[in-house]
Image 1 (tube, rainbow, N blue to C red):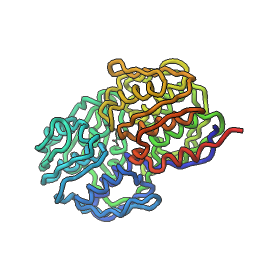
Image 2 (image 1 turned 60 degrees about the vertical axis):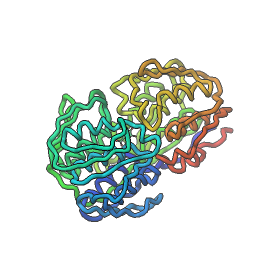
Image 3 (image 1 turned 90 degrees about the horizontal axis):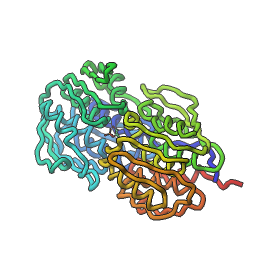
Image 4 (image 1 turned 120 degrees about the horizontal axis):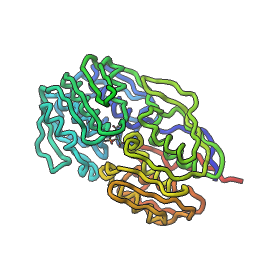
Length: 423
Ligand code: S3P
């Protein structure tokens, strides 16, 4: 099989969530072009409507209009965040500065994900929580007057960081946060700067935000999601020939760690036509097949490629030698136990993979992958193994391919469209 053509991937999930949240905080109408319209984006839109924002239907290819009221309104019902951890954690930050109670819940996967990582610092700021079931959802938040916060995050996480920055915005107080290692995605910081907030990063890794700005109605074009593009990049690398262009993808350096790892493994992805749109770098990704060798992915790199580990692990299973992913314990609390399931599913299709402590080891082989994959409804596992399924002769049965809709509507069609038989 060869790859060919020029494709686009759906809008960036992280930026779409943030654009919807900021649109709900602005007083007046904002417009979001190129937004993701997947199940996760719909979860954000649904709960923000319950909180008083007017949002036009999320349809592929149409611009979203969102009218905010400056503040959120007390919801009449429970806020169901579906499968989306980003919606939940960022919304909790926004709600912390509002003087009413709101109850959040989610689907089976989201209800098992840890929330103390945000409720602990939000409590320090003055928010109150009740009805909490252990560490997870459902929970009720009651916001109000907040205190400034200076907080060392126990884990590097853009969701924790963004939650706390948003609490600073709605509570109108200074917030400083520090991540233990690596730099997680900085979309919230970039947007806040665009709205006039002072957001500074010091050499020792502290991010200081002062509420000097104002969220005004805006027009924003969402770039293609590099995390979705990664699956097509992987398929292109594993192909037997050709070249693939993925147009207008976000290339924010806090998101492109996977490209650096693939380069170390022997790939030569190129970025062409780079531009900056609304503070975010965007460009075309051009990829050709390559024979790859193993690498070591170190702890400091993990936040910059956290969502790409399933794809990288699949690629590692087709590379020469043993690739190590260090300190990837965070994968246990993603949409599934991604760490355990990656290793289990790689073995189920005949590859060599093992978890030791918080490290994942994947040894490459030329053996044709075949077997059954259990996704536990995790979109990124489904898409990673669909990419492995493009290897010639592969026979991989994935239990749930529909879950790809969480972040990449029409994934299967897009993957099929980039492949042609080699002559
Ligand atoms: C996200 C941050 C990441 C990532 C998730 C989206 C965001 O989570 O896994 O898909 O938009 O802030 P953590 O920062 O909690 O690791």
